[in-house]
Length: 336
Image 1 (cartoon, rainbow, N blue to C red):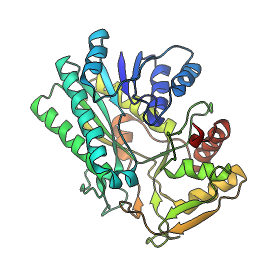
Image 2 (tube, rainbow, N blue to C red):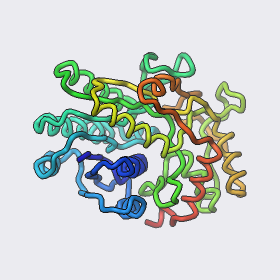
Image 3 (spheres, rainbow, N blue to C red):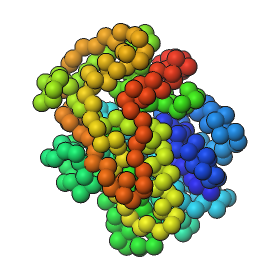
Image 4 (tube, rainbow, N blue to C red):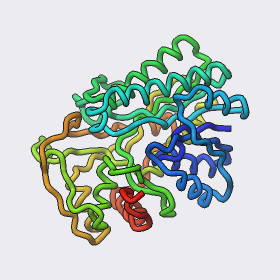
């Protein structure tokens, strides 16, 4: 069995689907703080079978022990954690408690049960304001917000763990900006409350659920003044996780790998593409830069190609198309 923490969430749910397609048996735990149990039923509709689900929090050792005592778990894909850069600046203590304490508790329970294979959901935010582009895995690390710092601290914990006991197999996947939704239209990004990521907000403006988009910063040193990001389709990202876990089972020990497309798009480029796909006008205001954001960030993905034999397949048009399909299928998240 593979345990997926945060498996009802955006990236976790898509990864559960890809794991199931490859024949893996899965257990999902998710405290539903930023997701919905409905995503579990929709995962089951997609894969055509039941998924074991427990509404647990990874910070609760007793609940984790109950799962590990009841099932033979060969490894963990760890997605559970808070993930909004802007919110982390406002709530640093909550982010450190949730992300770091949860991971420590999980690792301790895994060690107790001699379950020593983990794929960790890290982030390109650990690169801070990059000195060179595209960003390689050996680039200097310099976080500029609590979210990124929590990810980097966990990376250091995992490195220390491997240093102490190299019988662990650890994959640290630094991914860039996940967007889009499953091609079925059944699962996608639907946080509880107001979304903080760009694509779902753009979607809601296109659907008339939000009046205007706020673009944070129009004075960056980019062609159109807005920030540039490496947007990667969530299905591509999920497939990268499955590839990483399969290779982990065959013996890689500690690997740090970027998952992105290797191409950057500005916020305005994404907005214009979304307008084209949705045939809807997206009204926006350019406001002051948001604390914790960088001007430009995109990946060097050559190592992922080499180690995982993986590369992203979907372009920005498809990312927007799948997001729009999802948006049209859901109710307003604020109505939940």
